[in-house]
Image 1 (cartoon, rainbow, N blue to C red):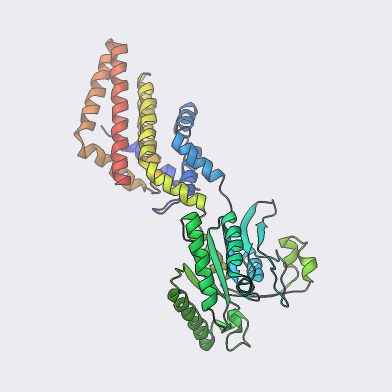
Image 2 (cartoon, rainbow, N blue to C red; image 1 turned 180 degrees about the vertical axis):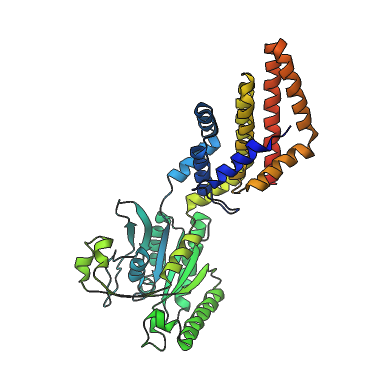
Length: 426
């Protein structure tokens, strides 16, 4: 018979633990984290059995390949393109959250394409930028030379997206610049066979009328200013559409920050040390831009990893089921006290397949689903009957009875796995 006390307790206990990421749209990184957390959180199985399962699961070749990609995951990479004076370098500092790169109000901050790595205090790279020369400067160079130079820099970097920066109050003709951008994206496609994502930033929106209002806490309540900001976004959307440039998002930002210390001294300080010299912070929509970038910029390795995972998920679930069945078979050869462990293993298998699907089960739904497996498939009743007979048979003929129990335990585990895969993965 199906015993709800053990299964119900274990399902409830597992999901009461912290650190398990859930959701139908989990990335493979989330799923890998869930798998790891599940193994570390389990305390209802003997340690040697748990270690055996963990060792076998993480030695599945397809899973090892995916995990290696997660461990080698790089920081998000993107290219900044825009006219000189659009505030590309300032935008980098705003995204980084501190004065990371030198800025200039007088001349072009970037004379040539420059690779910029934003790192944390431990030296780990958090962001990678390719800060290009202004589009105006590029267009003054012979077209072929300018494009080839920029495309070579971009392809070498292999960015996740292009961030096009345009001053909100810039009314100069943009057609030639968007045509230039389109040529770049098309040539990138010829090389990489992937069209880059484009995020458009309408920078320095605080300069739009009424320009005297610079504090976003104030101008976000000013209907006239916000209407002008929205109008500019709509204009940019129309222009990009006319040039057949697909845009992920268009976002207005302002990055007005003033320090009480000269920039050349700031740049040598840590982020924490810099904050004590922060005089004015009128940044607007930078947190939202950062979130949009992280949402939009799935790094190339992450895309490949998740795509690979979706292709092999069913195979992984089957191989994991085989591992559990093999462990069950060996346990069934042991004395009858293994019955509770076998029951716990069945619960863990269902939980594992749920994790592979990025899903969460409540205690009630888990109990109902497992009970339903037994109710809807007569083979489970047959397994129960065989187990009872083999248990009696073992009293007189231990070896033969144990063999029957082992085979039955393995087949029952395989059926649990099959039912779980059908339920969670369709």
